[in-house]
Image (cartoon, rainbow, N blue to C red):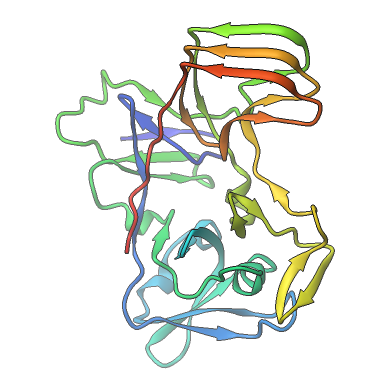
Length: 270
């Protein structure tokens, strides 16, 4: 299946199931290279074999890193042949520096490669070529794409509440996204707070932000200066943000009773 589009995307659901962006495990034999002493130094990874140098839309490819509690995402800048039968994968800066030197746990070797057309090889996977404005999807067994319900979330905020004495009952909040990692990767510090690329200083050879200047990943339902708000027996599902409900500054007396929060877990490569 392929369809014409003109916007950025990050999640896709087919018949209520989350599809997986085209991905594959990080190959064996990889390494790291480069200068991580300056914020704009060239740095990244090496791999044996030259085939990746011919992959298209290299700037859209992402590398995913797992370390303890942290799931970090780095953006690829370019992939070139190294002249000795391998490739150099230059990573986008300053994000690669941040995930490699932030306080807490740092990115080391990737666990997976994601968002490359060349990795589209299994049922249930999809890839969006933003330059060709085309989305590709490999149907799962039994899926009839003429009849399937296909949802591609565009909105990052489903609901913004700046009011008092509001009750939401029996409502399903669904199909939102969060697109910032498409451009900036995800330099997760903890609990989806990410390190900010400005106002940095070095502590014990790690990069840290001034206190309280870490970026907070947004919720898809946002409350601000809202008082006496209740969510009763609601469902929150297929949400791409860091959290379903964000209780912003000035929010007081908020009740969440009998609600269901449904999580769609992506595939993890160990």
